Image (cartoon, rainbow, N blue to C red; front, top):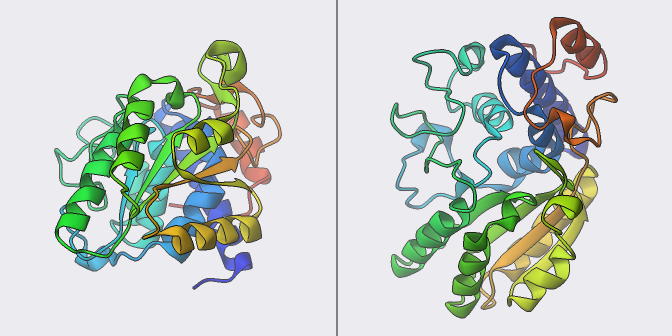
Length: 281
């Protein structure tokens, strides 16, 4: 298990990867990738039990992760590469024609680490429930993790899946929401009216944990509580409070960087704020 300081260093490099990938491609979604980088780093490097060398798409005997908010591939691909699923150098091909690193996760080209194609918002949670239910039927005691967005949670399918999971006591599932309060058209509260996600998920019968998604100690504690709740008859939702674009001052806290690529000059300014810790691709 890496230390908090080691996880923070990995997260910094992941953010550098995100900025550089999106700038090079002049396409992609940096805002939510940046906001979710800390807790997903903790998940991939400190919590989830999965051997990249032994990874298979069926996920038997290993923990599985699904990115329901499928547009956030910059953070996903960086984490997979840094964890050893494929060469870090391949990050330079992000969104290029013929690349395995497509704009949304795809299983078509067999990229290691991608269990489920995603990006049609609202569907990933349902897919994760299917995997979790399959593991229960197979008596496989590993865990399914899934990340949703708060804007994505305006989709009705999210709440249909929420009802199904609670009713069928799918308690080997740990879901996360990147609760950054922003979506492509503006603040979530003004677009769809997110209200209180904690109260909603509690009312839907889930075990709910709320944590600061940029405090590594709080993140690890949230995962510890989530793991302790497994097998108790309820699915778990961790609501990570975050800032869109976190880590770069001119990108933070605004919907403007949901799906906007930085210029070369903006990229250089952003990288000055993000220490290089593992070496750039």
